[in-house]
Image (cartoon, rainbow, N blue to C red):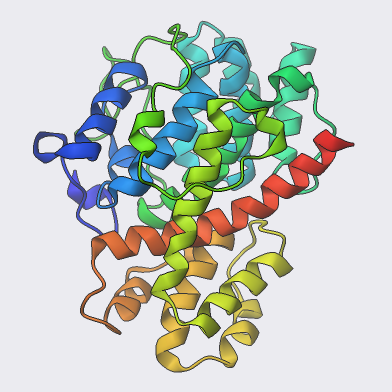
Length: 334
């Protein structure tokens, strides 16, 4: 299993303690067994707690049907072109008893159900120019929180998981594609909102977004954003400014790696460039983050370990997501 997570050595479930063990237990009971996409952030109990809280409160708890939120997560995964998550949520749709929806999306078609097709189009569009939401203001928090978490976790996963890795069917009776592949738990459980909030005690509190309407989803989103932002402290002020400005210039949207990165880095010293490059790529082109780039950054300071690596990648990813959130929030307000 450790070989399936790049850049760091994850904490296996049988060695987890404290907050990480609590997160693993909740994920295992309410979503899936502990696969690489869960383990990849385990060196940071802070980000593990905040990330899981947003996923659980938005995607798993609440009153919006699990099917609809699975379609939203699938659309956001398509926007990120992350094979791991696309295949995961196609499997979720099939396990929810809607194989025809998964088959249509896999063929490149829209779902026949107009409501599901509208949700899929909305979710895909969150990766670019957002479109008016096909849902009520009362339900916005669950849909928006699901989409934003997917944009965050897909960026981290693209940076930390091997290219082309997929989780398989996620069904217990099927042959897993790799040892430790995740198995989905019972879908559509009646989960009490707010159960993850105790995990956030002691973490930085940010401003809760208006679309969350004072729900636990808003607390989880604000905490994840504020916690990930602490990763800027791993860079010099000039390097952190370059990260902020570059991701803002591209409005947090995914783009192919290329020479567009040369300009923002040119004003920085060589050591400053190493960390800024990793953070910017994590936000905009995470699949382009290489082992060599991470190693070059870690070589600039012997104190930089796995905990710092997760934080730097999460910082870049969440910096991009805050721009996506702002664009989506504007369409909701309109």
